[in-house]
Image (cartoon, rainbow, N blue to C red; front, side, top):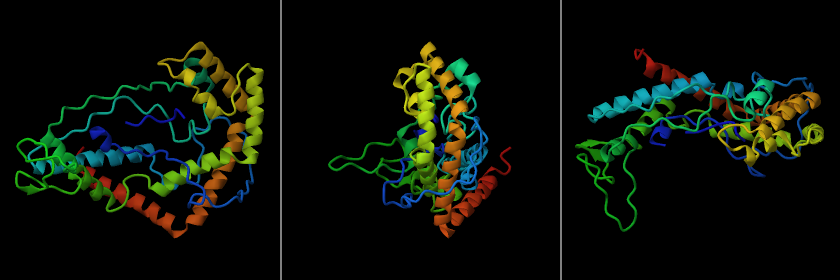
Amino acid sequence: MRTDHFPAVAAVLLLGVVGCSPAPPGSEGDRGARRPAVDTVPRVLDATDLPLPLGPYQFRAAETSRLARAQNVLTDTCMRRFGLRHRAPARTGSDPLRSRTERRYGLTDSVQAAESGYHLPGATTARPEGPHLTEAHLLVLLGPRPSRSGEGTASAGPGGTSGTRTYRGSPLPEGGCVGEAQRTLAGDGELGDAEPIRRINTDSVVRAKDDPRVRRVLAQWSACMEKHGHRYRDPWQAMNDKAFGGPTASPREIAVAKADVICKRRTNVVGTWYAVDAAFQRQALAAGGDRLERIKEHKREQLAAADKALAGTG
């Protein structure tokens, strides 16, 4: 689904907070075949500000930015101890998605559909070019690379070799300065959204899509699309059509996107899918008990550690 663009050395300093594969059958994310009850199905098209039960456990965009900035500050502080400096490449532009839910159920903005089809307004595939990093810099930044069997260690410049655990006589932190920064913020836990939360987030929307209550309205949406001359099973299939992978939207893509939004409005796909998605999330959260409450507390601890790291940096 064309909803997120993830940024590597630079990527390790950024926080991936979205998406994973649905939990396999029999895993913790699969709580059997029982379908959760849905009390109310709202009539809604725009999914941008729809609140989901998982929200308090997830990092909002601004909170993710705080973590990323704090990680960069802590990483640079660590690098200075070794006589080096490090600055992550500056992000250019703003996030083209206004929220986590904006395209969770597909495109819903008729203006975007008419102007750019399924392409995200302002999105770019270009990544900021970071500085060239020497072997010594990478050694301190990321820690020593494990040597492959049968090979000697490659030179890492004046600091030693890629297999050493010291740089200029000083011991390197595990995982380099990036690892040290992550532990300062998250301790022994995960930095950013916890894996169980990411799993529930993906699992709920996929299970909802396969729920009979949602399949019913998706069939209506598909029939509506066919009347407009477009054959798709569901909005995700339309949004991920390989024919729409060019740099700009084609006339056909715009026609499909416009029909998609019209048919969503007529069939209330978003309202139904959202209601069932939220019900699956409530079910998973109820089953998670105290462990998920600990995840929420860990989120608060990470943000407090980030604020401490950022204090006085301006």
